[in-house]
View 1 (tube, one colour):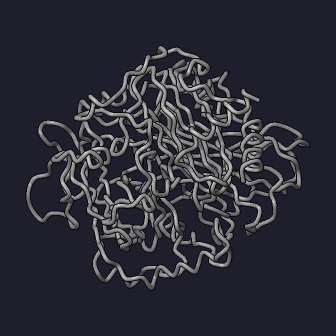
View 2 (view 1 turned 90 degrees about the vertical axis):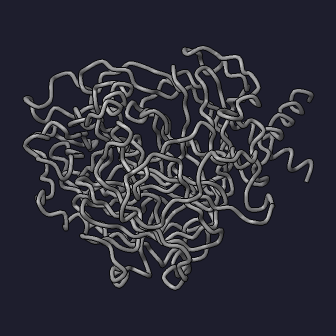
Amino acid sequence: MAAVAATLLWASMLIVPCFAGDPFAFFDWNVEYTTVSPLGVPQQVIAINKQFPGPVMNITTNWNVVVNVLNSLDEPLLLTWDGIQQRKNSWQDGVLGTNCPIPPGWNWTYQFQVKDQIGSFFYFPSLNFQRAAGGYGGITVNNRPVISVPFGRPDGDITLFIGDWFTRNHSDLRKALDNGKDLGMPDGVLMNGKGPYRYNTTLVPAGIDYETINVQPGKTYRIRVHNVGVSTSLNFRIQSHNLLLAETEGSYTWQQNYTDLDIHVGQSYSFLVTMDQNASSDYYIVASARFVNESLWTRVTGVAILHYSNSKGKASGPLPDPPNDFYDKSFSMNQAKSIRMNTTTGAARPNPQGSFRYGSINVTQFYLLRNMPPVVIEGKRRTTLNGISYSPPDTPLRLADQFDEKGVYNLDFPNLPPSSGAPQIGASVINGTYKGFMEIVFQNNDTTVQSYHMDGYAFFVVGMGFGEWTNASRGDYNKWDGVSRCTTQVFPGAWTAVLVSLDNVGIWNIRAENLDSWYLGQEVYVKVINPESTTKTELPPPDNVLYCGRLQSKQKPQKPHGTNADSSSASIVFVRDKLLIFMLLFAAMAVFP
């Protein structure tokens, strides 16, 4: 009984300030290097508990999530939870604007709630170009049983990570960027951390391990696809099979069939795929580079195998064709515009999604964020938004506010691109109005597709168009069923408009998901603060908050575990039998109602 009481006490201490009454999911992760050869060349990658890609977090709406992370890398680490909205809790966001990095050999515990969310998301390391080496994994947030899903229960749930890949280490890639160089063409495209099936003996060397997805004939599977790559938009398709789009980044969509779909960096989609073919052979699953010279990029193609249990042979012959529109991006833009939110169904809550009626809300703030080609600032090659290249200060912005440290950043980010003046490096922040309704237009004046993501929020994608955005562009906005998501593409020489309700207090990151653009400065933070001091709209900093920069003296020492430590040596002892924890918590609620 004493041991049970001690465990209950530990659990009750651990979960504060999470929300009582909702279940808990515990994860104990060791983030470490391992060596693999996805493209036939041995290289160092980032694994979680020896898995590359990392494990899928399978959780449910409103669950409390506790992730104990041991940093066994040789450099600082932060994990960010792409698309998880962290209601009232930017302290757990895992980016430099809100968190000090976890030093090598240290562990840190994230605690957050997936409040009022469903859908397909992923996590990844946010520092030092580390995502180019792995460290990513899926986040599947299931509906609560009381909320209906707008399709029948699939016969299986499959997660597929696609992304361009370099055989150079992530440290070498960032060194190239620091030296003012482009990364050049990737060495391939991985699917679930594996190289391509040998569909072509000239392009694909022998001995490469490829991904196989095993299915049963006649069954329907939900396939969640995440583009976790560095900077390449990919066209996804399954030979001879329709992709019935059902959900993207937390929103159920109108269910439409696609033969292929462009998935841009940082984006996630759920497809319902029915195994309705005759299984005369296996089928190709393909992710190929978009908007590039196909004759030069033929080797940058990911190929996995869809294997029916009654298949009569291996896949062979040419891959299914990609869209033939290298010189015309309107096909891809029209495809993106066709993705609409399903307004007839609920998601995390029982009220219909369409009841938001976002098109009738008055806009209170407007920002036009213009991306230009890289420029040289202070002798360094940098990227900018509105002429400013973001450089993270040593002290996280939210931590500086908490301890009233002045001068860490400037609350002066311009709402329009400057008409004159040289670009500059700085830490300039958008001053968002709590409970305001913000219109953001991303204007891409560069020559490549960019993706933009906003932490802490989902936004409504209401418009896209080529050329320069003007006030007249609002006449083409979708004001009813624009999809709500957290990452949107912006085509070169084009714009994308989003609307977002600023109801989540904190300091939140807006960034390019293309790693090279992000690393070189294409990001900004939005400060959303309730003028009333209350913990009802923002949780206090956690007891285990890390300190750095100006606040380094507040940090209590932690004995490092060594860069090759096993997760069992973490300083916080986690109970690995999660079922026991749930039973103890439920027992406690029964005894102490």
